[in-house]
Length: 150
Image 1: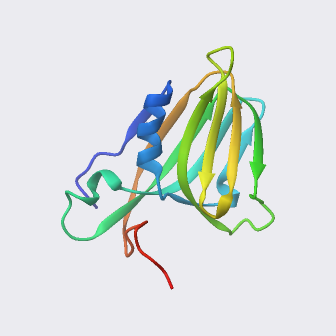
Image 2 (image 1 turned 180 degrees about the vertical axis):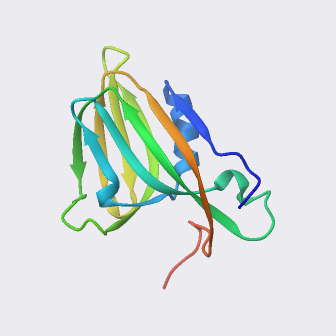
């Protein structure tokens, strides 16, 4: 196990969300790990997050950590090119952005996945939390966006 502390991040504005988005870039998850609790107005994603914050400074193998990404104040969820029909389908998270509504503090959170999948969360206010668990493991692959595949 590594000697780094688990991340505990919160976002209440678009600038904060950019930091969380960078931290979860290339996180992988299964479709079954997308959960919307309509009563509590909470949307959660259980992800296996690549530890970008340690990738350049840590010598040796790179790591992933199990994390929860939670969005509170969610009024509705729309999906595009995402299906829970295959719960074992693995998705790779690319970015998270926030577009404020005409009347703040609400707006739309857009979660973009590779392969053109997208989640759109209608929120009454931006309230996002990223919590790493203690469960960390070595990964064989470092995400590389510059690599060309043939």
